[in-house]
Image 1 (cartoon, rainbow, N blue to C red):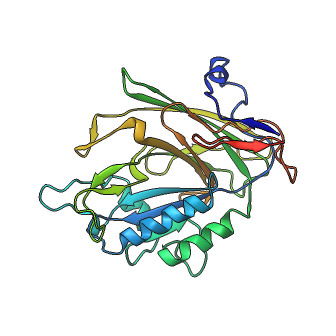
Image 2 (image 1 turned 45 degrees about the vertical axis):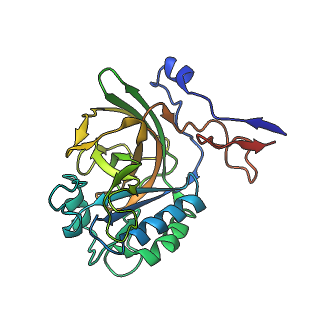
Length: 292
């Protein structure tokens, strides 16, 4: 048995990202993206946060959470922090949600006509999504310049099958962990730990359009964003940030997505992973893989 840990990807970056170096060309299953609609005055939202955490723990590297503070429960009172963004209302507006917390899993309609799901349905929806084949794979590398506070995100898409539509959209979301603040029923006063909080959509409200979506197509894009010291007067702490990249069929259905650290993060997949017992595994920071 060999024991290996994830190492920094700077060597790969040094040879340039113009060629396909980040993304696998092998067909892969979809990853799940849970967009969780929440607010600091929502009394049942701590339960939603706990469910989201359990989903991440049960599906490492296969499920990701974007906590969107939005709606009347997210409106701060007095000197409370404002965790809202300019993007949340439009994203929530297409879900058909009727209560909080609500969530969408890959913005997919599982029943009826709405994508919004109650918290009791999130786990089952994630379980369905991650067994499905994705027509596109996503490669990501993120770097940060502390002098300018500029995040640069390199994205590669590889289409292993024809997408159902000729136009798709790359979405790059910046999220932040470990934000301490108020939360109704959180049991911690003003020191409740908020995780996965959406801070900015680097590619704008609905993403960056891709018009080459046939099998065998490689798409490479680069995005940058100068992170201010604070967003809505809430400190923007880059070491606590991650980048979530996902690809949508339109402004709704998400094919797949992935997440990396904002500082020095990458999700490189190299080699064949199609066998039943792959000899190459993805590395995750803080985790040790043991394989033959």
